[in-house]
Image (cartoon, rainbow, N blue to C red; front, side, top):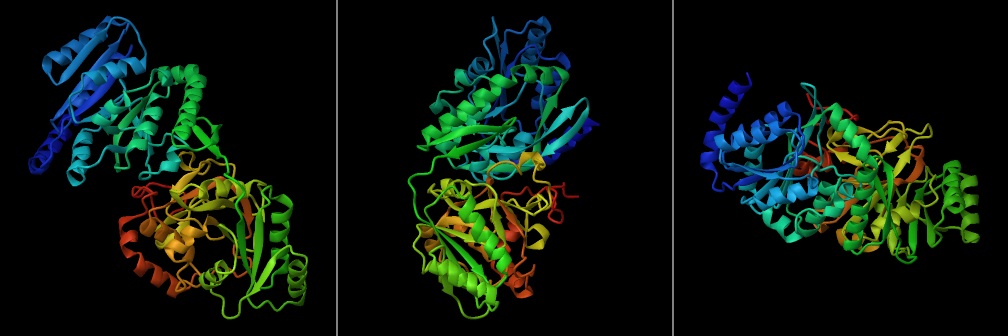
Length: 545
């Protein structure tokens, strides 16, 4: 069956390959060390079975104890001269063996394959197909899954290039293809990164280029064996320590200051150092609902460790006498600045109006039905908003029952836009741990959003045609598409959100229609931070069927 499938793929691929104007050689790098013989044969065979023919396989046998390994490698080399083998007399480690295998490579691009993993037969074809569409690309990566026994399982469908997610975890993984010149410029793998050498390489390479593409298809099968699990357990402490140091080095190279903290195995938090104490304007629109507003203002005052902020309440025609008394009190005592706004509620217009009247270099748009949980919420948001490549930053918002209300916005979810991990218990990691790590999103909610005033003014503020809903999503999309800034969601700034307790949960049809017309091309292409293989009619990252 497998042979027939490959034959059919070859026949279909031959026409595609004939049309390619660019047919680069891809060098597959494979260090080998005491591999299970069957798995080694299957791994090498997965390269030999590639329907794209312009490849070479560079193997460094890292002092394997099994004589049969050398015989297998020599046999493959004898059958196909595209397979190059060097037999190292003694074990030098994966970094050294990989660098030696790399030194044999002559292809324009380098692909990495572990000695017991497998490539899909069309893996290289897909890579070259993308290179023909975008020949300037320097880095390509694909989705992957695992092989346990004879079963393929646990697919990892990844987002497109997400620089802040990469600083939280090595989400790129396999299949990874890099332009050979880039690796040469970097001097190959660094010996001191043994155990997390692939993570370190990706961090260094992506500092040199932003010409990066994600192929949203499973092209790599990572084998999980009892031996590999044991080996990982034995070297886990060192590997995690090395990864942490690689991240710290990356931060230093980028001219940033911060501490790398491990939050779970393979997942990290960077606690960036806030530069100075810039003024933050916290803008809170309100109409009556005193119990909500009092809790919001009170917890900001009592729990926030960052103190250089001004509280701006935009009073949209409150009528309740107790609310009016409270507004007069906070204004007279200097707790808040209260600015009246007359007219029908329009979230976008109210906040644009407010920004013209505040002092802060940084803006926080905050709903009145929120409650501060983490004391350093402002520092956390500010530490990202201060980075020039970042536009908007959003917080982790919880319902009172400690389930997630907001963990980033997925554009297209539910037809227009929806919240990632909505309703997931806050203690759960979510799909591939993404609910626990800082990452890039297409948008974040305006219920708690920070950005530099300069960014807000550059993009032209909120679109006042979106009076009730999707004004925050629209703002974030314009920040990305007009200004080129990334949007970031962080799980380390945490607030409760009594969602829409002040105005109810309402998404007017005219807002939906306007947003969908304005962003039709984006909706058709799909949210780059949400994999197209995942369903848009569910909130649990299930595979599309």
